[in-house]
Length: 134
Image (cartoon, rainbow, N blue to C red):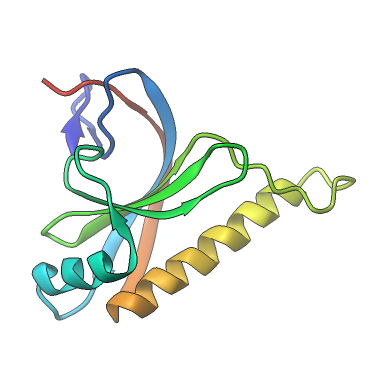
């Protein structure tokens, strides 16, 4: 993670100012992180230089967005929503896009957990602002 001016940590690093949504938590597993990382690499494209630790592209979204799973050796993790999410199947309902986003997140997190053989628990949802690191 990178430290912001106020001392809080962020996952993503960028050469520009890039807002994103972070769901942060932990990977619950008795396995060492090295084994978990190996399993993630077999299933997802690892993105180098994008995050302060390991980052894996989980899904490219319609509208130019992406879901990226980040993890650290201490098994803290985050699912990042970068860019836009456009999936309103039921255009008449104001909450449709949120419900669809939650469904996508739940399905992708279940998939990640299944691939690594661990439980993934998210505890915090917060907006972040990525900026160039040092």
